[in-house]
Length: 247
Image (cartoon, rainbow, N blue to C red; front, top):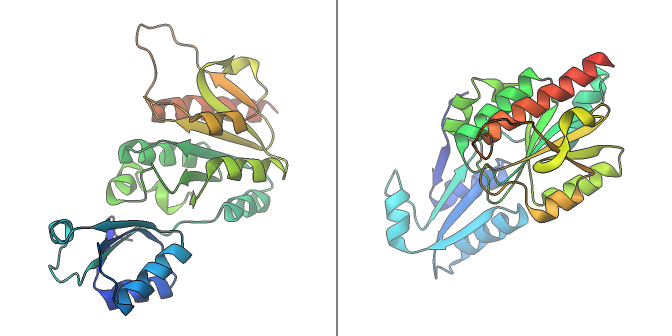
């Protein structure tokens, strides 16, 4: 696979991409354009919950590579997204309790790539990201993951809180990384678990945090306020690994 984000331009090309089942992250459409082919593309985008952006012609010209965009430009992931169900199935095949990482407000592609790399090495069965306010599977993410994106499933969901609630009904429980939480060594992190990580600046959103069962903090002795998101994900992931190995 190539480490690059796929740019699809032109009405026929974009429409065929939707119809073929390709995952389209974002769609840019000429604002005010109402002809038949464009309306069809917009309907497909809404059907697939693609992020829609109606922009001026100058913006389309700016991001176009071919300069023949015909009023529509789509951005597709260089790697196909998985479903959360695929991750649960993978855990079952391995005879292991599910271990997922869920990321909230992670917009830095280097952080996302590093977390996917950690998830792979820690034996997590997948990484779940939201459709909005999040980095997607771009070239930078693929490179930062050191190839782990080829092996660790990544799912994109509309609402993290709803996903957490649905998985809790299936026996999983969730721990949220939070500086005000219980010291991670004092928590039982074994069993079917989802680890929720937020951004370095904003942390985990309020609604997502309220959906979790517990909050875990990492002991810190220095003067700096917080760890980088990918480092925090690594520390907590390996505390989960440690507890699993101890049985």
